[in-house]
Image (cartoon, rainbow, N blue to C red):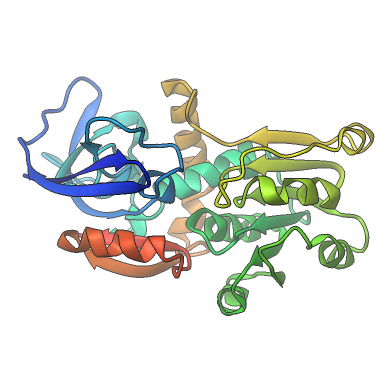
Length: 314
């Protein structure tokens, strides 16, 4: 079968298409005929930390397709998902609602598992609360907007692109702030009537971390999920942390156990799958590329021109 491999080399991430044997499922694994997948910045962009220098590794982290032998439509975490077939742990397999296309299904698993982790599991978001998402035009950012609105929250988003913010208004964006700088405090405080934001999703990184802390309301929560700016250190206002009883937490699977990851899958199925099946959440796909166009899709993601997810259809 055909499968892509990635190799980190300095400031480049090299992509190679190879012929490899069909994978053989072990205990607790499903062999999936892959119909679609999607791109994730952390894997494909050098410096994001998911692919360390060394030998080439199977490319792709998620997929949607049909289970060999049963025909069941599933989506989920799938290491080596940029391939014709992949192995998926049974505990990672999520049923695909009938109203979703393969490309939409392939764009759901990782983004919405991350969002469930930070909005529900750790963020304890409640209806009526305010959420602020920095870098809201990213795949995770748009998913956070959609899930937060489905949960009854009000959402503020920052982006350097006015055009992207305008395109997100039909998805329920309450306030778009056009900026790439840590200068959104006043606009956010005005929108919330001086109260501040209950939950912040920080996709941007250390350059806006201090501003996020300033914007948080009493008992506010700050989720750090990415660092598009590649700034991984920031000062913490300990007085604000103390006085406002803030909660700062990270969102990463790096050190989580298999059972902890499986718990997030179960949470997504319980809390978000009904929204997806009812059409209350519909993944935003910017572009769909063919399997043999993965290199072009990677280049498009690197250009930062996309809004939402970039998908690969088989």
